[in-house]
Image (cartoon, rainbow, N blue to C red):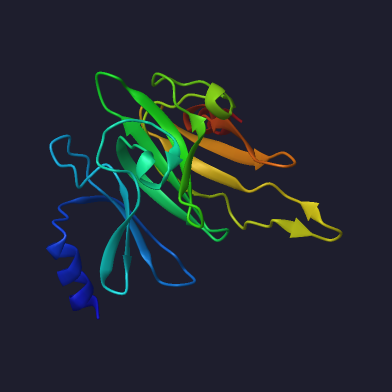
Length: 200
């Protein structure tokens, strides 16, 4: 029951939660506790399944490090998004004095964590994969209906919208490439779009 799940979560010492998403096929919850440099139970991705809480990735250490399971490190995770392909996407920012903002991905089958876009000093720059940079990404969502294949194996790369708070922009990230996925970040300047619409 929801009461049992809440009791199990409380027993693990979970405090405030900064990001949460749900697996729509199983009902499992994935969440990230709010960043706290003094609490090693934070800085990790966790799962609530059948009333039990377990760690998916991260070990409590602060950082932006890719790796499998507890070998990975996280900063301040501000958003999570479940993908039907068995992936978790997340917005992650390593706080001061080593500011770094990135979009990262957790493969739920292998628990492998990879940085797919960003990772450099916070600023605004479009580009492919880690050549892109973000100010402070705080939300991520699919860009409409995700169609991965159609007709004779035609592949349509998934796309995602990302809210970049410091850049004051909505960014779009697309995945494409054979034998692997490459991420490319671009922006849609809402202020510029609105001003051009009003002038026409």
